[in-house]
Length: 200
View: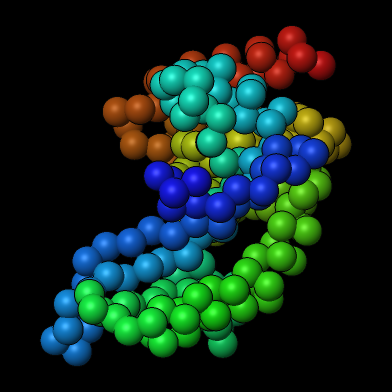
């Protein structure tokens, strides 16, 4: 979808996506655009539950909420790969072709194993629930958003330690989120639990 700078592939569980963020940049005194690669996936059952919290407005936008999203520039999968590309404003076709080839290689080498791993909810649940108090995370770099998806994934994956994970997130919501959103986050988390219990 061009308007989202994204490529989506429908999957049985939802979708996998590859997209790029771009911004104007100057490299070696030359103006151009910097392109940063992002990969993500959506599990419909997780997002349908989380979107009941009203964090994303509009049915159309809710269709495109990812369960996990990884900026490869911030959280590289490989230290030997390049995930940030610069193209000058008047780049020749040869430069564009070179960047396109590099992106294609990243998809094959880095994105495809990522998609294969997280097509299952169990690794999604386990990895989203790792380091709950951390303010940065490779699968969702927004602590509050990650909390809801971690809990929903753990529920749908039927992790045996779901209750202890939920209680840990309850503590995180009140001790590690910004003070001005803690009360709302507390209410939202309990609302999510009610939604999940209703779907059990």
